[in-house]
Length: 165
Length: 66
Image (cartoon, rainbow over all chains, first blue to last red; front, side, top):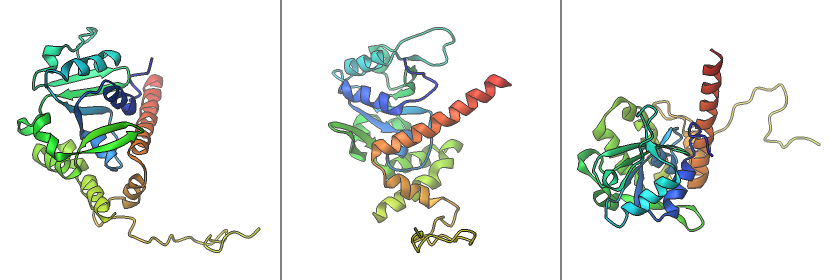
């Protein structure tokens, strides 16, 4: 079994892709996929809460043996009703931490964010949908927490360098 | 065999000749960003993952001995 203290972002994303989950990568992993030289310890995604997507997401999370973080010795696994909520599911998996978000700031869910995304090729036949970099920057500006403000210069310079290419 | 002419001679000070500024005015290391942009998305993830894992191994190692 993988060591959850050693995050494996690729394994988490590939498991979601394998189960054909509709999701958008946001947060630090999104920034890294865009080329920002940052580090993060978890994978943040906004998932589609469409009824046909939730069983696929649950199957992927079961394969990753997901359970809620911060519950002491209890191992509470997510279920369909939890995943249907607009709230945040903060999970630990065999491949590290994974936050499953129904909505983010401004009550934006999968459908609202979809026009502000792009697909990236992770491997052959493995595409991952990520928030576009200008929108990621905009959201971090809106949220305005210290940890978001800290990475803004790196994100802005990454966007500028990307635009030169 | 002599080293290529672009290589500095041993003992001589070396000043890299950057095509573009290595740092932004606010101190951001642009060479790291350009290097990341030269990678594929998968390679970017693997590089970040490897760096994070190294730091966590160091952190775990330190906490286990104190």
